Length: 200
Image (cartoon, rainbow, N blue to C red):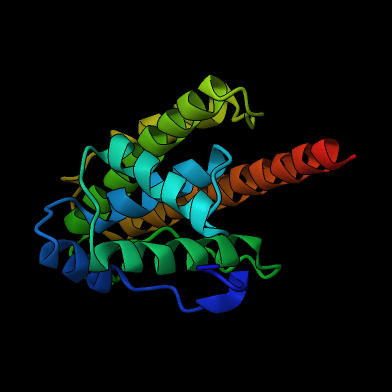
């Protein structure tokens, strides 16, 4: 078994660590897009809890982001996926979208929010497509939430730096945070219900 328990990796990697891992693998995608894609797959009902499920998640992530994930990067993604799911399921709502540090330029953070949102939509769409094709239950993400996340993906990344812009960015991140928590938790509950149905 690759993963003994969900809490095996509790520390959420930082954006810079993800950037280094992607760079070392020869990939130029934004770390936020990678994380968004992963969360989108979790929201579609994918799970990194076992080796088999994790392999399926990596394959779907490759399709969603049009990249090849190999070597050390796969190990990093396993750590990231478990830490992400652990944070989402934490009763204290510790989950945060993977974004650059607050002291980075506003433009860089806005771009990464856009990339995270685009990644989420790609991962969710890819995940739903695969699960429907396999005849597996699909979690419902409201059209309104999808529309909101799609709008966030189109955010103006050239917004001038100001207190108002910072507050608006904080509001956007908070929306994404709870949208992710709610959709992933719904998908996990659906998975558990389906598993119980098969066992009964």
